[in-house]
Image 1 (spheres, helix red, strand yellow):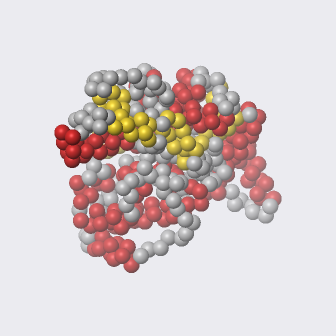
Image 2 (cartoon, helix red, strand yellow):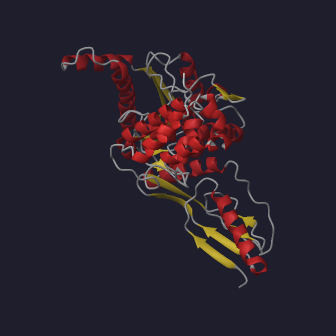
Image 3 (cartoon, one colour):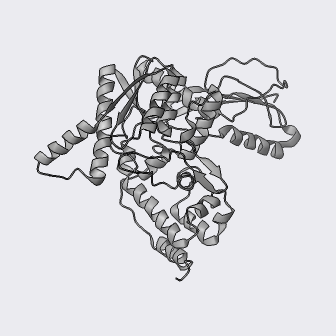
Length: 426
């Protein structure tokens, strides 16, 4: 055999090319001098399987007898004709910002396959990190002419966030509209009063009314513009059900639904480097000092006074990926990590300490808070828009769920007791 050609139809996920290189190294170790060059040829494009939108990166590569890449295609996620000589060595593209290329390709392909590239994309622009990144991705992928942003403020939206949204639209050269929804909120409360529920639009009901009214308005704007809505939710919000059904959980496509907040922070820096300017405002990005995270503007739904998202960023991001992404684990594995003390050797350890979760009673209370929200929000994830998949553990086909109540096994209760015993006696 002079050369092996591997013809593949393999969906791309983060760092998949590194996994392939490890496999090649295993072949070299096993076959030694019997190794021959291998040409890996992969398909490009997108496949919409319902809940999950899969990407194919191409990334066709010729590996040498040492198992290392010799030649690879340069046009990621795009068809390319690459002519080379076996044994030739060329520079291989770095993969540092491949996530950005993947998201842009996914948006383009979804837009082309589903809508023939002729609809407008409607996006709610709150001024927050997620909507900022989403609007920028849409514009980078499709241009500015078909993107329309809407800032729909209530009395809880501060002028700084509105200003960030407006400045972003100006930088991206997209159409932008802003207005206030307070009149609609009041009208809804008055209507509910007349249905026999006086003064009931308060608290969480009042928060959800605002979110659903924004969804209602976006749907109306989309109908007027002949467009479709892009969803701004991220993976942590999706896992915890931190979204309002028929409010901010609507859309034709979820571009960020397989990305945690930490990954979005990294993506923001990629975008700013690629564009050579501060498109994603620095106020939205945290500063890490030692084991502390400092937000100039902390993530918030802005649905009530002084509201800040309840997530423990960096730790909850890790926890959700640990539970859902390959190789998958369960909550018992997390508890065993804690009991054994092995968690202290992990990269996430400083964040557990930062949030006070090195205290056993705080750790178990937080873990149960996460798992309770996770279980209760399955129905939201089932009704969520199709998710652009970038990991080996996206909600949908990768991570299948049933709408069942949670059940705490005897083993769980034993592990919980063991953790609680570690708590110091006051």
